[in-house]
Length: 188
Image (cartoon, rainbow, N blue to C red):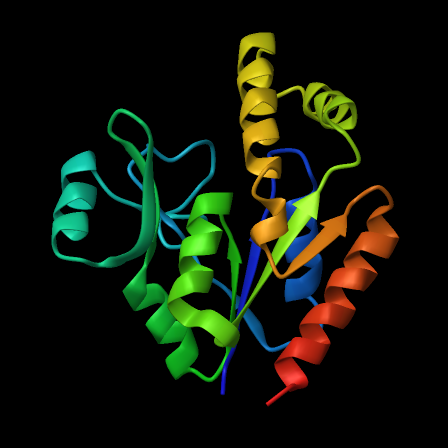
């Protein structure tokens, strides 16, 4: 039976880098593409990075019960996981990997129970997170402060996850996550 692997973490913790590493391993993983109502950025393409929907299309899908989880991050800026995307991956006999926020990750875990492994990627500290976000050079100081405030909130949820992976050393963190996922997938 296919399994579900949920990765959640504050922005800048290294979650997406770990997910990319896992997708390249022998774990039969396929990435669950999220839906969003924001506009594509740069070279983003519909059905590759996200499923891009208008705010009204997103609201219609919410009303129809098409989402496993969703969040309105800002007014009319929604992100969510479509049931149809997860069902499609599971029907192909693949394990689903998610890169989603903490609340969404816990909601997916609650729906799938023991069939899902939830992993929280913990940054070494808020200060290290600040340095990583500043080094990215993609956000203004005000946005970084907002991300750091949200990070502290998200870190308060870490204990609700099946596994906390401290990302103070990337090689160790990815190896710890890999071993846990491999053991989880191989378990009946």
